[in-house]
Amino acid sequence: MRSVEPVDLSWGRTFINGFPHPFFVWLRREAPVWWHPPTEHSPDGEGFWVVSRHADVAAMFKDPDTFSSELGGTQLAPSTGAGIQLNQTDDPHHRHLRALVNKGFTPRMIGRLEDDLRARARAILDGVDDAAPFDFVARIARELPLQAICSVLGVPQGDRLELCEIVDRGVGAESPEIVSMDAVRELTGYARTLLAEKRTNPADDILSVIVHAELEDGSRLTDKELRAFFTLLFPAGAETTRSAMAGGLVALMDHPDQWRALQADPSRLKVAIEEIVRWTSPSVYKRRTTRRDVELRGQAIPAGAKITLWEMSANHDEEVFGDPFTFDISRDPNPHVGFGLGTHFCLGASLARMELKVMYEELLDRYDCFEPAGAARWSNNNRLVGMTELPVRAHRRG
Image (cartoon, rainbow, N blue to C red; front, side, top):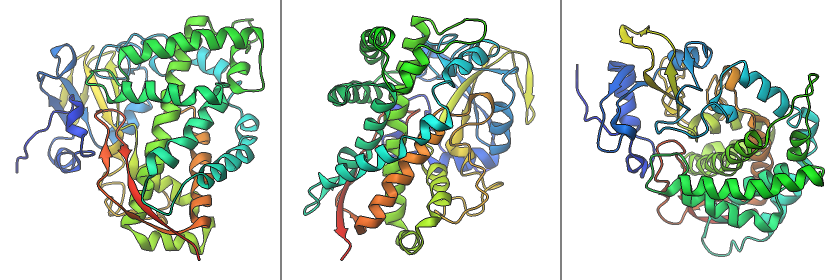
């Protein structure tokens, strides 16, 4: 077995230059179920299992009875949201929460956002001074998802930058959590005030619908569950689509033939967006906890073990994707797990796809091409891996 130098997957700085693909290529080939020993950066000084193959990741997503989201949360560090936050619960409580939240995320509610998103995208691009190099993340990729999630949650647009800065500090902090606890406390404080307003004065937004949603038995989300929902959805909506949008542009700059193909036939964008999500996989892993003793690929894993499912690795699995390190906008079928699978399939997948579709349609219509204008900077985070800066030079269509 040809060895490779292991990397510390529990340390955010491991990802400061992007995802460590070479290590995961080795893992998929030689150790698809690998024990990660504890390091000085591992939360609670605990080791954990690393699962890197697509088939195993998909099977675990679909088996919540064995691989729990609730027992230890969905990140390596202990989580205060375990058992409360939508993504950190198991059935039957998860089914109950999801039924209430889904009342806001109906196709009608999401579909009616498209015209608003397009107007916002055009206004964002109109405000970019593209005569000189600019930061694509700050000016474009960050702004549309931020405005979209504020619209969904009924957050005043004037508050969006303050909340975004809280999230950015929390994601970039030297912290074992996905978002630092200081940032979570700030978001929770904001949510408390916003939710009180929605209870008293509901508006025409998805959060107002969810606050007042009621099942047949009369049950509603508690204030604690609503605050947990806000602190989940705002960072997720602001960060992950931003990373996909920026990472997609990098892929298209690196593969100019693919950009030209989209310009020639914008109808290919629907399939291309799935490739962007596969390629960027902004949420690169999820944590689960085993409810019973299991065996995976010959490895005996005891009940109560911390186990991580690496979507970015699964989305580059050579057994599933031909030429996985080739960015191909015509890849179809594309069974990526960028939005998860099973009971915890991403609540905001339709919204994310719509944001990417709208912004890329506007970019393709307005610009002939983009080119790098400096080095990109990556986040200091082992869960939400994306660019924090992307200097580009834009060339308008003649």
